Length: 369
Image (cartoon, rainbow, N blue to C red; front, top):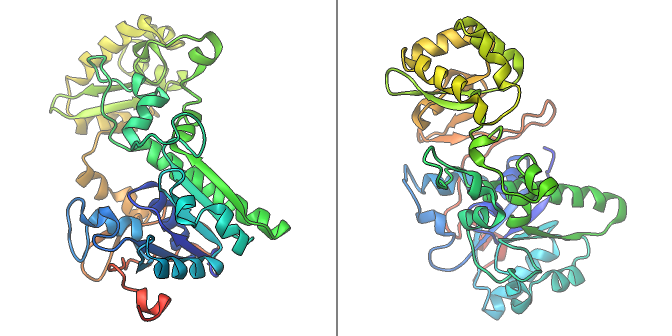
């Protein structure tokens, strides 16, 4: 496997760090999850459980090894330092300054192991006036400006369903760690990655920031291409109370659908986003309300139109296409797991569906306590 022989010491909890290190574990890295005494990672106790652990925990921490260490205890800290001496990657998600105060910051660990790639994930990064401010995903989305244009039909900011700041930071961290490991092959030196969720969220907003960067103005979300100002990037009600999303604004899609519906003359209105598209949107709202979702899926599938039927999560997990891609795995207990989305032709992921019990590997890795 691609990452066989890579040892990762993971002190992160909740979502960004564990999702990152799960990807490393799926592709062969040995990930040692260091947990606090007592409850361990808080997501062990969040959400529904269908077996030994919660669904949240097992889908982020499968294939890892769990050890319990009290970082304020001198003996336990010594064991952690020994682990890090043989590690290739170290991941933590504490507030800035905590690791240094505990004596396990980058300066301390790299002095012992110069090949170590050290990744610190925090809301606002290791520097700047907000570095000590605590936050989770939605707070970061708010400060980044993204929440200001993530609006419902009432024009008010809407709570995001997917924790984009968490997930984008996780994936940026994965890329950064792999870059650092690649550089180490040439230089023999590790590196420090200061990963700010805030930085990552702003960076991921490149398609939204045109008005602000070019004209220093806040856009009207309802007038922009991907936030409500385009009839062909919009969600429509169907006759049976379901929804269909038009999701492609290329003029070929516009002409295909409007032509099939007998209104080709409306197509020129869709060349640019803005309130002038309202007649097209209203026409489409009236049309979609006339027939069921099943009818529209069948019809749109024949027209070469970019669309998606709005599915519930149970429907999405039962989707035939997802099954054909092997994205839902079932373990010996009958529990469903999410497969790795990284589909390599050579040395693909070999997913270990076992999630570790708290301190399951403590004695084997750390010796007798």
